[in-house]
Amino acid sequence: MITMKNIIREGNPTLRARAKEVTFPMTNEQKDLAHKMMEFLENSQNPEIAEKYKLRAGVGLAAPQVDVSLRMTAVLVPDEHDKPLFKHVLVNPTIMSESVRMAALSEGEGCLSVDRDVPGYVPRHDKITLRWFDLDGNKHVDKLRDYPAIVCQHEIDHLNGILFFDHINTKNPFKVAENTIILG
Image 1 (cartoon, rainbow, N blue to C red):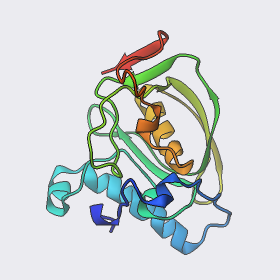
Image 2: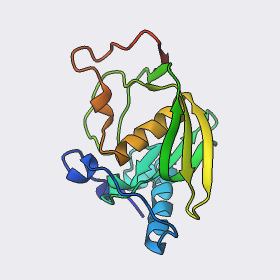
Image 3: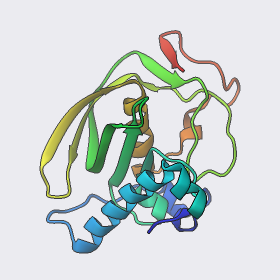
Image 4: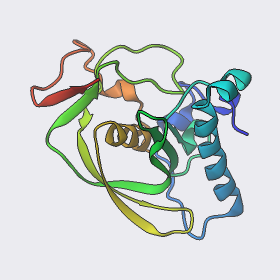
């Protein structure tokens, strides 16, 4: 079981490295890691389990965050009724296309690997077309928008050694381009 002590924090060089492509067939160890990453997200979104194990709630967890430099991330975005809106382990995800219109979360972004509050808007593409592979090597293509698109972009950034605050305007953290929508 992955807990907060397994998640590396900013300053660890793995978080700033470009993760390696996963080759298929995946090893049993890689598949086990994928399942444990998703289990962490499920547990972190369950108030009783999260409190018991002192887990911070998360909607995404990339392999580099557990100090494994592989292009793999678990994503679990709940809808307003706590049902999965988008729940997958993405292997070798690639953004195929993105909207011109940008979006940012009104409350900014956080990260399980960043223990401090970094205020500011994080501009992301409002819509993306995402290609990814499942654990068996099957290819998938999804069109995502709004919050699920933002979460996937945040996670793909982890695979490229980028942290969310790298996108924040350092001179004016709450300034965004005029074509940006702010999502509540």
